[in-house]
Each structure stands twice: as C-alpha cells, then as structure tokens.
Length: 302
Image (tube, rainbow, N blue to C red):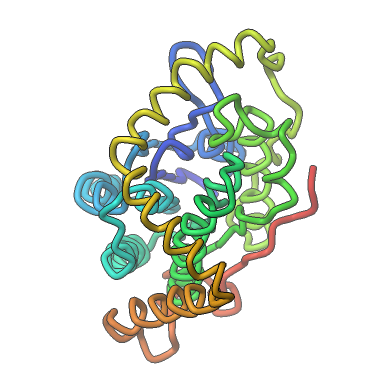
C-alpha cells in the first residue's frame, strides 16, 4: 500500500474533540491514518465541530474529492438530530449523495453508526427517548446506505463501550483519548480484514496521562456549558414538545406507535432515494468482488 490518501469528513467526533494534543485535537482518524500503511499516509482532516450533513455535503465533500482520496470516512449525523429542523429525508439524501460521490471516485468508504446523545448525557427518559428515536433512525439510514455502497461500517453505537466512562471525556459526549484509540483500533481491524490496512495497529494505551478531576470539571464547565447553552437555544423548546408527546403516549400505553412512526420514516426516506445499481451497491474499483460486502462488526473490546 503505497501513497495512500485518506480524507476524513464529519463533525467533532472526527475532528478529534476529547483527544487534545498541543493546541488542537488529534482523534481517531489521525490515529488510524498513522496505522494504515508502513509508509507515510497523506491524511487530511476536513471535519469541523458542529457540522451537520448539509455542511459535509456542501463544504467538506468538494474539498475531499479534489484530494482524490483512496480512503474517505464520512461519520456525521448526531448534530442533525440535535436541531429543531431535523429532517430524516434530507439527512438520507445528503448521505446518499456524499457516499455515492466518494465511492464513485474510487475511494473506500468508512462509515459508523453513532451512540445516542441522550443516553450519553443520561437525560430523563421523556427527554432521552425522542432523541434516541432520531438517532436510531439516522443509524438505520447509515447502515442501509453503507450496505448499498460497500462501506467498511463500524457499529460505534454498541452499548458496551458507551457505558465505559473511562473511554469518554468530561463533556460525556466525546470520547477521550482512550475512546478515540478504541475507535481507531476497531476501524483498523476491519480494514486489515479487508486488506486495506497494512501498518501496525494503533496502540490502545493512552499516550498522555488522564486529565485530573479539576481539569475535567473545568472542561465541563467551559466547553460543556457552552454546548448545553447552544442546544438549549436551538433544541430545548422543540425537545420539550416531543417529550410531552412521548409522556402522553407512555401514559396511554401507545409508545409503540411512536417507534413504528420512526421506523416508517426510515423506510420512506430510503425509498425516496434514487435506485441503487443492479447488484445493490457500488463496488470499490480495483477491489476483489468478495471484498465489496460491508464489514460491520466491532472487534472485541481492547
């Protein structure tokens, strides 16, 4: 594997928030890039904190395609669920366009299903459940489209690692260094199984000491408080209305209707997309036919 070009698109997770190094962030994508091949990899991280699928499609994707990547990661969607303007049809269409553009240029696509932010923040049930439905819907779309485009797909939404607080930063929404290393190692394992990673696997052991309790509290009180304030302005009034609806259904024993409605929305969003190729996915040019199927399982915990 020589002269590999890896471009990462997405939001704060891919930007590396939670894994500080120097004056910026490092994160799972940078850790993975260093392990893709024995030779240096040309790595460009276009991810920006707060990015939604629209930002990826309109701003990051053109820059990514200009770099002619061999590997492109598109991990985004949580910020869409945290807006009162959430539109699953639009999210699905944007992801479909981005995935098709990357694979159409010959890039191997990396995707991931993401954890539910309400569960990570341990919100009360009535507030958490509407967010969980949204995130499950986005994950279902990502999973279906990952299959369609033959992506290397990581189930990063699995509960096992999300419940291990040692893997998360003080804001409870972004992985810490250990968590980012976990993601990098999972992706490397999947890529190696596909013959697309030939460098040594990322180390699961942290390079830097864990932040002190006071440092974690400072981070939570600054960045964390700012995040909550922004979301309260944009999402909270809408979320309270969703929570009230959830409570009404819960009291009537009709919560299953809300789940069914969310599932139907996924079906509708996917049905509205253009027809896939005859074999159901876009193969990676030059890759053996057997490697075109998506790899989805996360390796055993490290």
